[in-house]
Image (cartoon, rainbow, N blue to C red; front, side, top):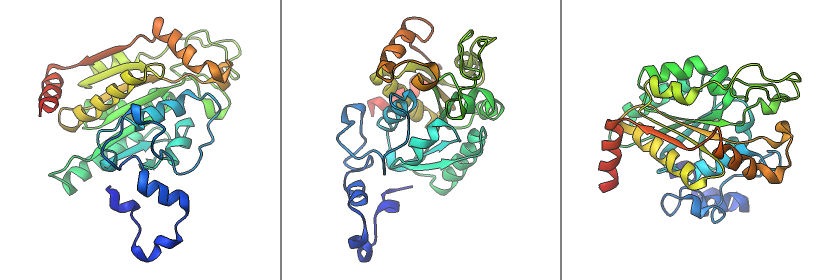
Length: 283
């Protein structure tokens, strides 16, 4: 987990492709931490990802990766789903787990990294969809919070199982009609944001891809606070044009509408988290 893993030995430099050379020279871990303002000015991914046009999840991933306080010392843990496609192509440390057990894997990795690098922060960030957090992985997620694991969890909430045809998820809005929910969702969204606050998370935020600055700041805070204080959670509304049947050009407009109603920006942190954040911001 350092720049060494992407630095070639001198004997093989001439064999590298131009794309890889560009990645080494101008990846997300060079010239200090990047911010959302830097998007488009550095090489973010190894090769093009196969997300649908207008995909809210891929946008959420881009914004999140540009907000990491220490990219070269961060490992992102994912799970099968739409988020997998961009994350596997990212120019960062990434590991894909079995569906739903990402917080268990992240917990073990974080504990191992603390032992291996006791004097250095090695950030472990879970970044998966609503199915991975709220449905199949809810048990693993909750227990990592109950145990107080020092990991940050980001849910990319596109409100649907997008890569398997459009089934409803626990985060689908009640009444929504989908390809595989022709009569509409029968129960409300699972209140994961509220559950996180009562299950051990010391910092939580709810935001949409239509507010990139707020999204970036939430993920940055979540990672920093998780280093010392406890588990953190960020829920990102990432609308899916393919399965929610709206034009790809309208993703941000749909997200903005959500901000005005059921997906208003919220942030919560414990007093201990506030003190820690204030202390590191002053140093």
